[in-house]
Length: 250
DNA sequence: ATAAATGTTAAGAA
DNA sequence: CTTCTTAACATTTA
Image: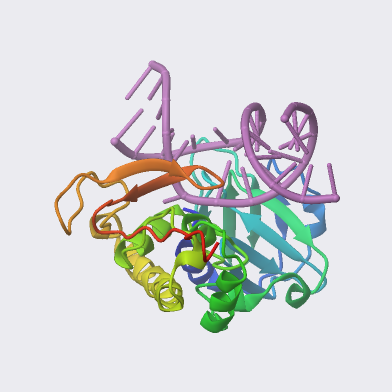
């Protein structure tokens, strides 16, 4: 459930809860849930993979990590919610997620221009950030939430395949044009992900993620646990060019 | 049925 | 002081 587009879907589905005064808040969260009772939901927003429930003086930050899930106006049976928020307009049940209060204004905490799904997404700023990290691997760069907030492992694999860049390329070795392609495609694919996810057809559109054979040239994909966080990379040695720093360019 | 996975954080080691 | 490694979290799917 975790990549940025999925959080956008949640934000849209929960929109009717805006303006609701919370009459009951409970669950197995290690968090002072009593603070929520009596609060009115002022806004529901997202920043990348963060789902944000804004109240007058603070915000509840929800992160679903790998296994989180939710139900709106219904409950999962046999599972205790991490947090259940209820009121006159309906209820929001959150499971297996990480919760945190944010007491600062959100604009002080979040760089909205880094959110791949945001109207404030700033491609030029992303390109600048990439240029600042010449030795960084491109597979790590796509997962860097300060650059591509909302991009996860699926989007990473699909974007690298589409722009034909090998995951072990370094940013500094890639031509600026290619880095620009990467930034553009990250946003384009994320919105395609959103539409396919809504239509329930996401998996059938995967070209690389979890695939065994390259759909472009037909040779077997490589599967490696690559990068700083050793995440699965599905890639084609033939179709995806590996940009490596030469001695001169360092 | 065992393992691995759409992810992050914190603690400890080097 | 960084930077790297590992574990923890907790659920679904292959």
